[in-house]
Amino acid sequence: IYQNFKGTVSYFFEELSGDHTQSEVSSHAIGGYIGSQIPPGCPGPSQLNPSTRSFKIVTECPLIVMFLFQLYGRYVQTNIPVLLPLMVSAISIPGPQNVSPNWRNHFVDLKGAQVKTVSFLTYLLRSFAEYIRPHEESISKSIVNLLVTCPDSVSIRKELLVATRHVLSTDFRRGLYPLIDTLLEE
Image (tube, rainbow, N blue to C red):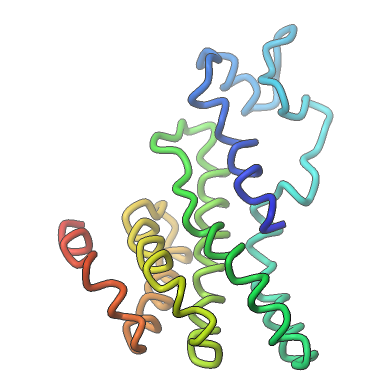
């Protein structure tokens, strides 16, 4: 799922910047269509998105991975180096700049999935700092980007602030120092 995260973001938001008219995108977003106006690669009105292209599924993945790591501790050392770069890559995808009201739910789900992933990464900070250290700068930039672009969702903002507090309580706060001006502007 994390390997395909960039593709999932493109799947939902790529056509917003493409050559499609607003009515085409709007008619797709609300489930209706006229002739062949549904953007290519998007499901039709009677099709469902596969679970591998679901931000809601990605939102639940970090919690499941955490439980699996607790149950099967012997697999942590081999899987963290593989999973970590994928998660860091997923949280660094900025998403669209402007989102129409019709696509707002997908945008909120995207940011929610990224914030849950950040929360999981902060959970790993205490026990696996040596694996996360090479990604310190990227994680810090992603956290600041999420703080700036976070949607009006109290639960998502709260979780992001809690994760940020955890980062600030570790040595990884150094990664936020170069970004302090951006934080203070917002």
